[in-house]
Length: 410
Image (cartoon, rainbow, N blue to C red; front, top):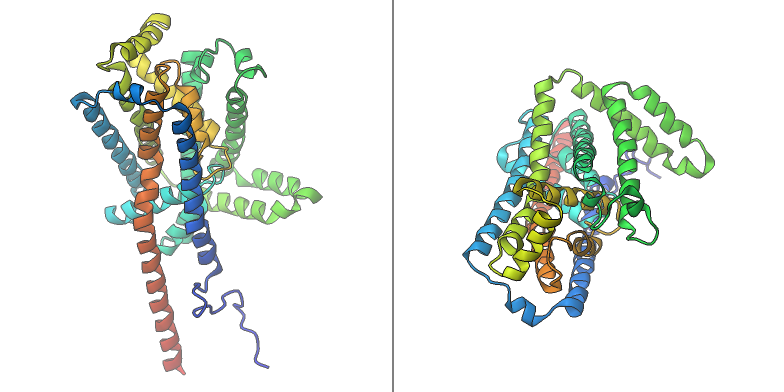
């Protein structure tokens, strides 16, 4: 009997329709058609349910589809594109211009697509890590890129949520909330309680990552290994060891980076998230605050200018703040891209300044989810299969070349 090859994990499956790299197959599974279908079905099921329950033709006919509305829909598209451009710029900055702008465009689509079809609480980082490694980015820089961007995104939310909470108080989390006790009251919506849990969870892991990367990874490694030493947590030990190693690697890669590097990286991170949230601001400017329907406009003004007495800029900041609160809550949901939960949360979070016209609220929710979520599913279903096909063909050629070289060497 012939000796078993050393690299036994790579099994030739060329006749089974699979690739021979287990990591590759794992990454493909996470963005499989089944996951795509699940994300679409959940989101559409909720939308259809809300349409059946809430849609009213008379209220729909009151929406005036004029030049003003289409202008702000166009601005929403501009911010959607600015978000993507900001992520591309961040990728260029963090990798020291390793990728071309065209390649950054493709990779961000892959990254966003994988985030859209995996549970929000998991995110697309695993696929992003694999995708970047396949593009010949050095292993250390690949690990640094993924972990560093997680830190940047986390501290964006931690800083701006705290800042806006100090400005607007509990009202930014839940319509009608006047105090923290209102948010924690069992009789009220569960979203207030989830908000504090999600923020605390984000603060803990963000602080651990920051300390492990920028101060010292040894204490964090000891903490992770200590907790995974317990019997019921031992299954997470290998993951903890991997995380500790990734923090050490990231720390080495970032050690010689200047303050300008970090400021530029955080600046485009702010630009990316702000562009995403400004999509809803544009929709509200188009459909509500400057609506030609006096009833709709009056409802908005009575709340923003009457009850709260907010100037126009502060009105936009409150809408922005609500979205940060809503996102941090949906960030820990188990559904792909927050499907179903995000649509429902939208109807609750913005009902005080969007009129009690359920049909208008529903139409805006559909536009909002399309611009911030479904567009990446649609574009991703075009870009990702082509990207995967190119990878498979390239790797087959490289393998054939190695085999040929091996044969000639003999």
